[in-house]
Image (cartoon, rainbow, N blue to C red; front, side, top):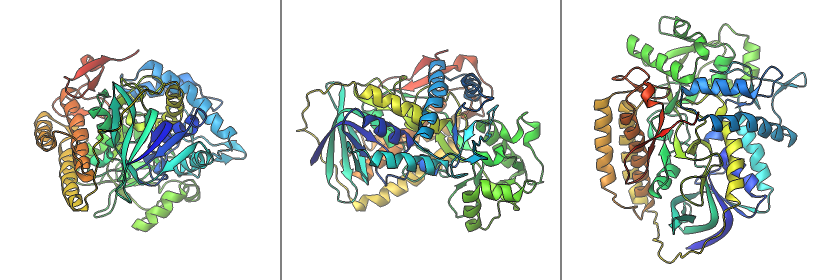
Amino acid sequence: MQIFEFDTVVIGSGLAGLSAAYHSSGFGTVGFVTKSELDTSNSYYAQGGIAAAIADDDTPELHLIDTFVAGRGLCDRDAVEVLVNEGRDRVKELIEMNMDFDKENGKLMFGLEGGHSRRRILHAGGDATGKEVTSFLLRKVKGRESVKSFEYTAVVKLIQQNGCIIGVQAIDLTTGNNIIFKAKAVILATGGLSRVFERSTNPHTATGDGIAMAYYAGAKIADMEFIQFHPSVLSVPDKEAFLISEAVRGEGAWLLNKDGERFMKDIHPLAELAPRDIVSYSIYKQLRKTNTDVVYLTLKHLDSKKIKKRFHNIYIKLKEYGFDLTKDLLPIAPAAHYMVGGIRTGLYGETNINGLFVCGETASTGVMGANRLASNSLLECLVFGKRASEKAATVKAVSYNLDNIKTIHLEPKNEQQFLEMKNEIATLMSKNVGILREKTGLEATLSRLNEICRQFPELPDEYNLIKIKNTAEVSRLITRSALTREESRGGHIREDFPEEDPGFEVHITQQINKPITFEQIRK
């Protein structure tokens, strides 16, 4: 086994990981580890922008109110205050570092997205904000001599001794060699898990491995029932789902049913710009009502030149699918997009385990509540990536022993078994734990997931088998939490409990080998 030693190890190369690595590099040496390429992440593919209250007619308080409304009573106030106030500072820092956000006549352009009461969404490259911002910060990280990057290196286990995380075990996917990364602190920024569903906007790497690893180590996991399904995702048979940014509706696009009717006008005062959970569920109900697979997004009534310029990348991509963004009815259906819950943290990304910090989509900071407000996710990455790096830098080194670590193997023969199990789990999750849920389907799904998990009472010593166990475990965390929450709220809708219940204004938390607990909202 190779052994590398750093002050801080950051796992994941999305915007949260980049923010954590960049700021950690000012405190000491950093190991920057990702299981794919450095530029493969949910952040990189994000078409939307970054929400920040920096326009003249905007304030952090207004941003906080919008976040609270979208979060449906489950946001922790102190975390949201940190987000909206420090978020403004983090975005201004990026601008001072020469990050080039879109401008018009020399002034910053602000877009509008669902749930926002002001135009506060900054974009870069039109509809390529994720790519532009992550690429910008990646260049900054690569320029830091104190950072050493490791691509195609999959972390498989957190190394825990005497109640502290002292590093991680990883496998080099190109050679099969095991690597130990020893560190004073580990920052997990491993992204989401939406690839446990059949249709997803996420890259194939978004499978929740970081959550599984933290769960096995004893970390608290919270709010896993809240999965955000993006409303406007292109749906074409035998083709990958392609996300059509919320900003398209922000610029005036309409949603039409099979009869060409705008159905959102009668459902919510913001119509197509209602919060995502409402729009996705409304589309789902239209599909059931009309026995169809898609509704339609149309921009025919908008200025075609402006649309082509504003959404250049989406326009080009849709051409590959045979559609014209400015003229055609675009067939869409919701797809799994964002994990609202995750590993429970404090205001500095700290967990209940010494030495372990989390930021970005992997974390449950209390910011998102029951439903993420559009374009708050990239902002959360910037804010809590920096905060996690600051707190991680205060952790002191502890003594350790690496003699008893079991080698993890990479056996190509097990890859087919992983793919079969992954597909089975994805089918189960989409059928019973998707936009609409009820007790019988949830119990059947949990029963099957329990069977799969029982095949692996301990962490296997082969990478593909570990991936099966992780996929089943994170799916089980979602399903258990969904069964427990007997109400409908945000990104969790129960057909058998269709109303919000004030008694469930709590975070549902899970820990390995412990009963489910309820944590009060910090108001």
